Amino acid sequence: MTTVCQQVFLSFNFLFKATLIAMNPDLSLLDNPAWWALCGPQHDLAAGDGHLKAYLNHILPFAAWNAPSATALTSGIESHGSAPTDLHPLEQWLPPGKPFFMIGHLPTLPSNWQMEKELPCLQMLWGPESAEGPAPVGLQVTPLQPQDKMTMYDLVQKVQPGYYEPDSYQLGKYFGIWEGDRLVAMAGERMRLKGMSEISAVCTDPDYRNKGYGARLTLGVCTYNVKEGRLPFLHVLETNHRAIHLYESLGFKTRRTISFWKLSYR
Image (cartoon, rainbow, N blue to C red; front, side, top):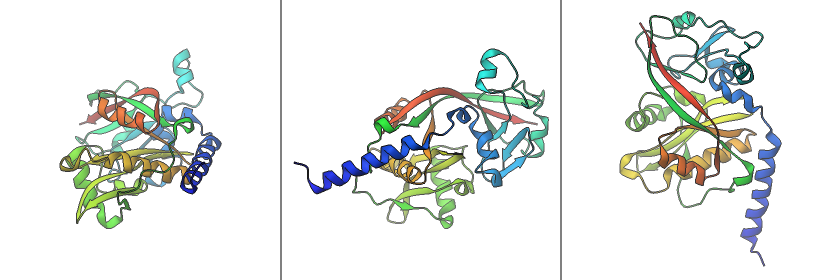
């Protein structure tokens, strides 16, 4: 005989999984996530034209191009309406000497551009068959506010420097865990596509690790997005086995490997 709490949990879990299934987003957009985010829900944070785009440089150091579809690339056929491969025009929206990232298929780089590093990542989706329902209680998670932006920036730079700007908080919703007046862990959203949202900036101060903060926050951001009708996804370095194990334990499954290219120009 189930308790009232168990019945409530089972009911929530059923509705939760049904919501994920009903979303049915176009997963092919994830082959070029920054492009479709900048063309879609985050267009107000974009600079660029019909072929090349970048996030405003105080928001996020990411750029994108209208790359051929994965099907076209596999078959060797350039997709109809795809962009020319000259990336020079991006320079009007990206400051010289400052590293930025492009994701997925990369065309030939201009001669004054430098590839600093390739970062192969697993692209992982949160699936309905493994959704666990509400996160465990016991940790106080609070929404982060614009006035917290420099505290958020300092924590991310301490743990994961290079991917986050002081105004990156404008990309979506962020949640944190505080110890007194010290922000010790956070997580939020980065690229938002039609029907999908990327979980990012999952970081914990080194002095507060191994307390389950990252798991609690990740589940919190996932639950928030599902309630908003968006499928959660994320990217993690394929060499970061500890994080991959955590995300798998939370219900994420790998969709594909995709490279983040760290670039700059002079």
